[in-house]
Image 1 (tube, rainbow, N blue to C red):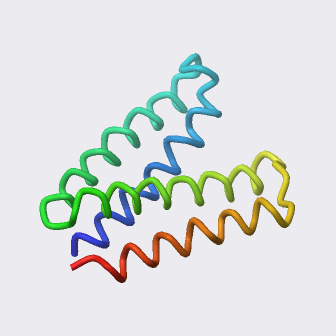
Image 2 (cartoon, helix red, strand yellow):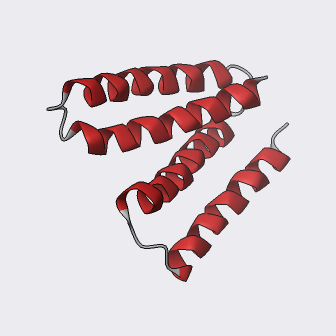
Length: 105
């Protein structure tokens, strides 16, 4: 169950990272509210997941999900480049996440 909580926390990290872009420096109300709420929930769920998962693994997986998701959403929503080097780098992050999951007790 804590792995599911950790994945949800990582997805919420994507939500707040993208929300930062839409909030325009916290000058727009609703994107700022969404961003702040996502931050609180993401970190809170990370804390819950860390009760039974190793701290290094949990934090690295959380950051990895956030990094991959944010980069993909940047490509989809903001037209950021999707060149082969960038996509390969995201694949390597994903491989690291899978490796950490497989090596966790």
